[in-house]
Image (tube, rainbow, N blue to C red; front, side, top):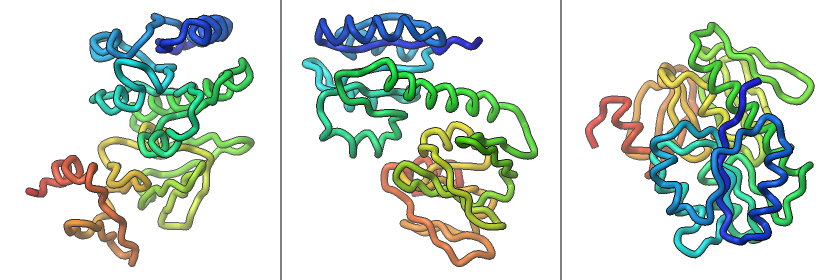
Length: 234
């Protein structure tokens, strides 16, 4: 069984102890360390293989949102917080789950299932396949990457637009980004991933698709990396 290498960040002693006990009950999790604030783990995150961070948001030295934004290649993250006002930020940052305190074993298990699924597809995406297999509830979808035009985030779902139609799945954009082959797919906006093989042209704010009338928006924070991948000078 593949262990999920996990670290825990929580500044309050009682919630930290409670969460640590719950984490240690979940066999699939390998707890690498427990910390009081993100500043303690900055170097570790950059130098150690970590699959998952369980973190509070409101902390004295650096809050969880700022911490996540500071990471160049962040692991998967689940925020556990007593504050609901950060939900929009977490959506924009593709956080895998957002759990309100007090956390329960059952609720954390649900979040860990998302992590397991995301890691599985991350591993599969590193293998060259003619199709990708996407498990969703009680069905499995088989999609050829070459036939996917783009993916659009839709609340708690994603819509996958292919040459044959649209498939709706209960995935996050972060999960889709991890499972699709990097060679062909790139995030161009918080709600859009596009297959570069289907792009006909690009302007400052939009992507145009070959043989299709759709145009897709380019988000400002994604434009630099997108232009770099496409060989476009800003």
